[in-house]
Amino acid sequence: MTNPSTDNTRDRLLIQAEQLFAQKGFAAVSVREITAAADSNLAAINYHFGNKMNLYLSVFKERWVPRADGVRKFFRKYLSEKNDPDTADMVRAIATAFLVGSMTDNERQCHINLMLRELAHPTEAVNIVVEEVIRPMHIAVRELIRPSLPENICLEQLTLSIFSIISMIVYFGFAQPVVSRVMNQEFDPQFKSRVIDHIVSFAMNGINGIKNRTEEETV
Amino acid sequence: MTNPSTDNTRDRLLIQAEQLFAQKGFAAVSVREITAAADSNLAAINYHFGNKMNLYLSVFKERWVPRADGVRKFFRKYLSEKNDPDTADMVRAIATAFLVGSMTDNERQCHINLMLRELAHPTEAVNIVVEEVIRPMHIAVRELIRPSLPENICLEQLTLSIFSIISMIVYFGFAQPVVSRVMNQEFDPQFKSRVIDHIVSFAMNGINGIKNRTEEETV
DNA sequence: GTTTGTATTAAACGATCGTTTGAATGTCAA
DNA sequence: TTGACATTCAAACGATCGTTTAATACAAAC
Image (tube, rainbow over all chains, first blue to last red; front, side, top):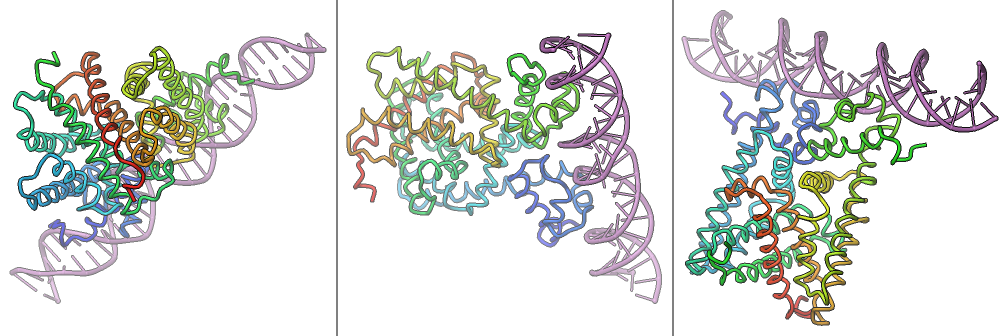
């Protein structure tokens, strides 16, 4: 049996593999490096996962997707605590769920790096990323925001706005070292909170700007 | 002599290395793959660049930075053709320079991938990326936009806004396949033009939103 | 024609890669 | 205690890695 909750070696391999793959990329990490970090034998990966690529895919299936689910749960819980949440509440919920709640800084770095690496050089795992997380999230957010906008709102404009919001959140999560370096400002909790305020404000003004744009204008 | 304009092998190596490093990352590309793509001998990299890592750094120095300079030149030319350009003109200039002008789609993909790989897993090249391109560009854009804003504008808010604009532009350049896939929309020139319109509109509303925020509010 | 220096080539180097093997463990039911 | 099964282990496999070497090709200078 390979019950993940009891099989320590398998779990340790997944955990260490995720860290290393996220930091260095698939090719730059050796089986020996992973098994050493997981305090296991060299042959452990081939025994538990068949081969290195299958371990990589398992990282997405068993670590990446569940963490994305964690972000979604945090988002829903955050929203459920508001009475009649408006669009600003939703944007803040997304940004907070991703940049503060449900993940440590290290986990967030892992999560984003794995995703961006897949987008830059897709493997089989990109289908998991897009179909199991990105697309469902887009649809969910879009349908949450839509009721608060005019009925004849341009769907394309709305979807592009959601992409823009995501882009800001991902960028500020991903490029923290560069932001810190350019702004000469530590990424401490106070600053992070101001960044979230900025994202919410910036995005809200952006979304409000499309309120008056309708389908027929964009043809 | 190693005059780049006459030494064909050296140039071919740089060109092919950039493509491959951008696509797969440093570790995933072998010197045999690069030299084969450049129609040169296996030992050519070590002869012209010393070793593989030095070739990687040379790609940034001799290909990446010059292309970033090309974007800046396009940006300045675009602005110089406007009389008394406003902030919207500037945002459109940046977005157009990066997403349309001065680069082919392939070159843009290369450019962004190399940069994001460095941010995700920095090597010596990250200093080139940040100090020679990102920081100067931030300062230049900030000082161009500032005159059109209130004098007591919060500098942090303005810088965060610039990061947000950059994040949108980079994201739409980087994640084109995902955007296409999720929106079921080809990334043809018409759509690209609508994306730029969206970025300009979204960003302008975002920037205007900070106009009334001043230094003392953020303490 | 000879010399000098640059550029290219084929071949080989030791090191490390992912994977396989077969024996040695540990575990639990019969 | 025995047998069956899951897991771990050390050792080795062939393949590929980045790099080095020494011989060669080729041009311009004398």
